Image (cartoon, rainbow, N blue to C red; front, side):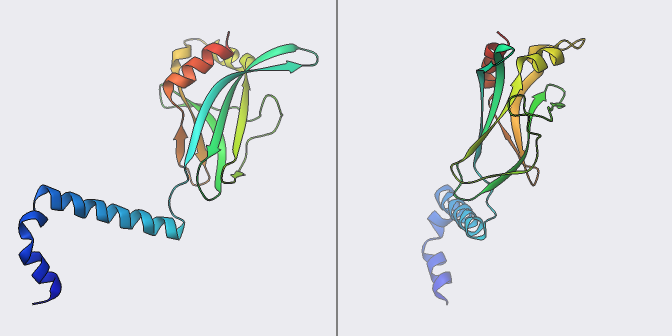
Length: 168
C-alpha cells in the first residue's frame, strides 16, 4: 500500500465525516485563492462609497452634488471604466461627464490604495427624476464597472441617504 492509502484507511471515519469534508473544502478554496493570487487573476478589491457634497461655484454659488467614489483596497492596480446608478428595472443612469471637473468617463487606473470620485450635480439628478413616472426610490444603488465588466456596488441604504443630502 502507498502512504496515501494507508492514511485514508487509518482515518476514514473522520475523513468522510462532516469535519473531514469541511477541512477538504477549505483546503481546496485556500489552494485556489493562493493560485489566483500568484497568477494575478484574483479580482480587485474595489469598494464603492456614495456621499452628498457641496461645492462653491464662482458664479452659481453653493451647489449640491452626489459623489460616487471607487477605492482600490487591492495590492495591485485595478482599471475602472465607468460610474453608474442602477435603477429598479435593472437599467442604469449614466452621466458621461463629471459635473465638477468636466472630465469624460473612460478607462482609468486605480493604483493600490488610490481612489477616484465622480460627481453628479443635483440639477442632473432632479432633471432625471422629473421624467414622468420617476421616483427617488427607482435609484437602487451606485456601481462602478472595471475593464473586464465586473461590477462593484455601493449599499442601497448609503445611496438613499446620499440622495437625500444631495437633493436637499
